[in-house]
Image (cartoon, rainbow, N blue to C red; front, side):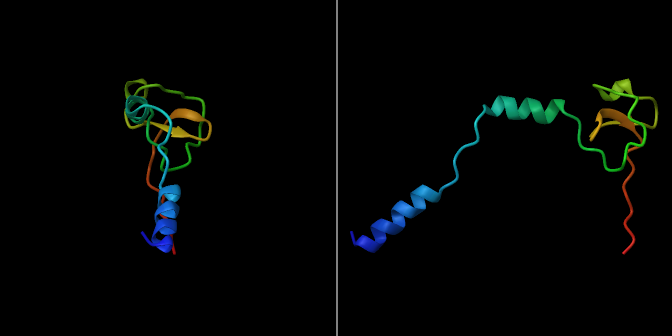
Length: 80
């Protein structure tokens, strides 16, 4: 094997992405149990939730800067 190919092979092996710690089960449970991020500013961070059933009609349980709260979760329209 030529020295250049050997160096390229070693470089390739060294730069391959490393596995993320944690089991696939942990990643799956976190993605199922954690609500999606809020699409809009929650406005009122006083109504916390753990499940969608904790929120009143018309509100959605989502993750925001102040925790997991019930909010309208409307899309933000950005005018350009």
